[in-house]
Image 1 (cartoon, rainbow, N blue to C red):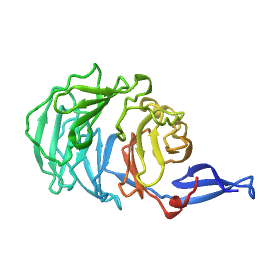
Image 2 (cartoon, rainbow, N blue to C red):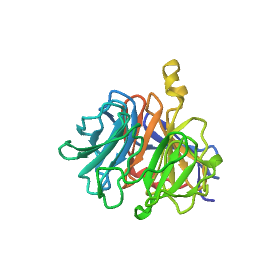
Image 3 (cartoon, rainbow, N blue to C red):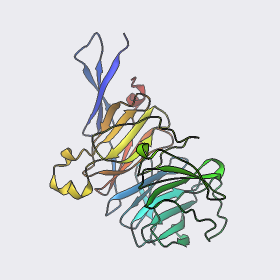
Image 4 (cartoon, rainbow, N blue to C red):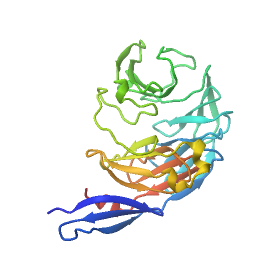
Length: 311
């Protein structure tokens, strides 16, 4: 009979897989090493992580006002983008990695030259900028607003362009995902409120039908999907306001791995001393990064054993 993976756990940055079979009903643990690179460049909690298309650069945003650029391979800090006066909630990078856009609580979105760190333009709003997303083609039509979509009451936490820039997909505090016509602002479709999410949009489909649900015993702040394997990674932990009142092990601050098809938890990675607020897979699928309330970015490179695991 085929060997089955029963459970996967992590100890001190090592990924452990428990294998059970007819020949070994008790199970044995096989270790796959994932020593993280700790990147300290922020003084306050992380809010967002973004890889460029080639996967060689990693951008991090935090509540300390200063988006930061890193080498995605070794975690070397390349520089910061200074100019915001509030928490930076989000960012996006152009396909050629020459331009970065950031959104902040200071009610601005700023466009930057990635190589020099120079601020090229600032978009001003009457409320915090919680989401930014560059359209396909990375073209900027004008520095002025060309369309305002009147959505529901409550904060919108994420908005992204749909295929060919024909639609805009948003998610907000009312736990409903909506698809809008980008030319007219007309609402085209919305998800069932009972199955929606308040935090983020990870991927897109032609419909808003619920496909899979991944259940964990902790609040979820971030999610990312592997581009290579059928793995979904969830991150979160207990509320930040209670972090200092308990042992970090009780806060459930691990990044949890789930099988995308079976919806079962298959592993986890410990390390953060506070809730995980941001997660991102490298486009090559060989590494992922996590950003926490503790102000650290942790860069995890998978070794070959990870890709040999059969579930």
